[in-house]
Image (cartoon, rainbow, N blue to C red; front, side, top):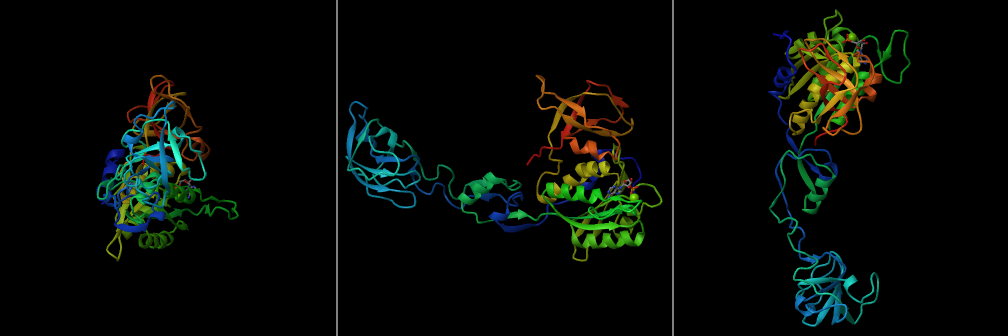
Length: 425
Ligand code: AMP
Ligand code: MG
């Protein structure tokens, strides 16, 4: 039975999330792993560095040989050879000798220190191998040597399951021998717009039509959340049309997001079709914008199921409810914590705001660049707060949260702001 009570955001969100599990893992080439989330604890497959090597261009020496070296009394060593990165191990460094070495080259046997070229009389850069080198400074055992395993040893933990793979993780995975990684499958999200008034973006508008901006914004939000949009287009306000796209979406995706048709108007068909195709679990949440929200799930013939969201049609409401409800679900499906993944900062309102007292309001604001000495940003209203005002949403970078129980807040009141422009990986 649909639950028609007014639910708090937390109650609605925890009900939605209670059954959501990360998608099964898949193995992908490292080159396709950016933005994906590791499905297993990952160990180093290689020791890095694999062998002792030089951190500088210079001369591999025995530290005892150069212990007394000073600029006034340099130590002269016979140069017995050279070792470059990718070659080696080079000739053994016997007492009284040195081997010219380049950064990243294997340390030749016998050497226990590297003297940088700057501390010698040798020419820098490409130069003929000198027969003798004058060393002008001592080098302690281990100087300028990167020891084998000083980054990580084979078998050591590298990155835990749940890590979102960013460029730096790609570097570490590559360096430790991972050509492929085990990551959660990327959620597929079917997107359906409903409404006789909607026209696909780019097509000529009729006298009573408007662009279907929700399909565009939701697809963008899906991509930004690391998931894959499956655009199913527009259903007119007829049960059959909504049903047809909904069934297509259930078969094609892990999550389905329909917009419009969830309030109590006579043309609001999404709830009805959810109940018919799967289940309709709740539909009133005490938030502003975005009170009407339909949620459900539908089983698939393959044994899987699709999570159904019916978001309000008003474009700002659809945007905000995606942010508050759909994004945490996508994060969990991706293998990340089921949070919004947005930092919350403290801010001071620049202007008064009013709202409906029984709902928590999410006011579109633009944060000033720098926080004050107390760490609080200034929050400027981004523009009109009507749920159709996309021009304000477009310049907002935060949602100021005004709690239930208040009719609004005066200017200079302190609020929490959810940053929309920052993501916690
Ligand atoms: P509804 O929830 O269907 O009653 O729609 C509420 C408001 O949102 C109406 O003004 C609709 O025209 C508008 N709306 C619904 N769907 C979309 C959409 N896909 N793109 C832009 N506006 C929409
Ligand atoms: Mg409609």
